[in-house]
Length: 311
Image (cartoon, rainbow, N blue to C red; front, top):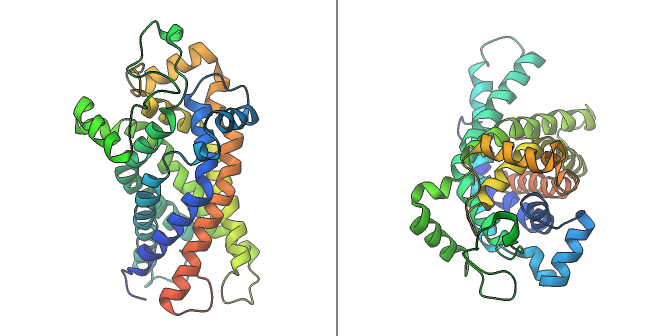
């Protein structure tokens, strides 16, 4: 194999699109639970969104992620796969690679992918969350301030993704597009380590030694479990990131990561950092299963292979 392969980027694009379509409804519920108010539970949140906004409420803000997360995942998977391939080739002159060497390569490749993901993913997540949160009822009494936009039933703050971007740049500057970047970095670097590493090792564990590569079933299961692990453990920092990025739809409450953590803990206790953990974990399985399966099957077609190969 060559040291750099474009097929990984193309396959990541297809897998990313599949993951958005599968995971966005629960992502909306997760965001509302973490950054919204008056949702007693996951089921209560689902009922409230459906009652107020119909089924289309669950797909609010999906057009922008569908157009952008496909590209974002393309870069993440392409960077991860090519970094891992480069590291493997770097060690090729040595004797047979040890398991610890494989783990260290996976760890470094995952961290590089996580850092790259933040540069692309922060604006994408920001726009998605702003569009998801603009129909969230705003309670003036909580802050003693008047919102910049009124609650449900009146013209929303943003008329779409392009208007949202223009509004943020106009009111907050270009730096406003990277609101929550620190929290996202703290979420995604360890998050991708707990995404790719379990996937690779679960694939190896599920696949019999006699097989040339994992079956689609193994890819689906390993990808789903890896996603559940990654999103479940990322929930505390995901809560902070969601709150920082939702901040500014109506008013600005937080001065930064530590201030957000402090205010959230003071008002709602430790449990606030685990808000939406069930939705995150449940959503992580089908979303990541679709992501990895779309990636692997696309890679087969692009390379003309008949066996699945891990990234």
